[in-house]
Image: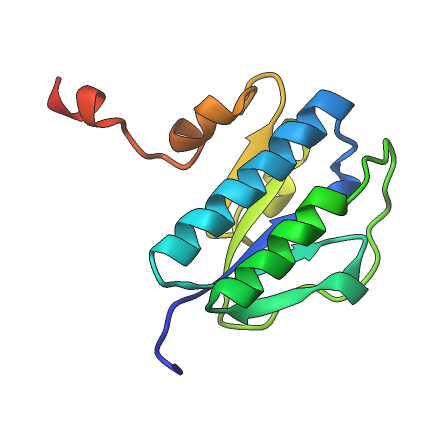
Length: 140
């Protein structure tokens, strides 16, 4: 377990998302968590303005269900404020933030997913945002 990869999805609610962008950001977080679960990677979740509802990296259906339930209940707030502790050292970070806030995550996160115009504008854009080429594009 100590050598198991650990990953935390950080949902940057202080990025001032538009409501439609927020829905895309939450869907992206759920998709990344589901993929990590299916890949047997320890996965965690943190919404920056709700540190008391933080999920440390874990494996298993129970951890997955708890994170998915949290994501299904987290409300949209136009101007959430950052408060709280971040993540455990040594954990890889996937930051999901607004496009305008992407630069503040560069160098701090392993993956930065910018949501909004000029970034991820629909869930279908997630593979591109993660730098994953679709199989058809890879063959060209």
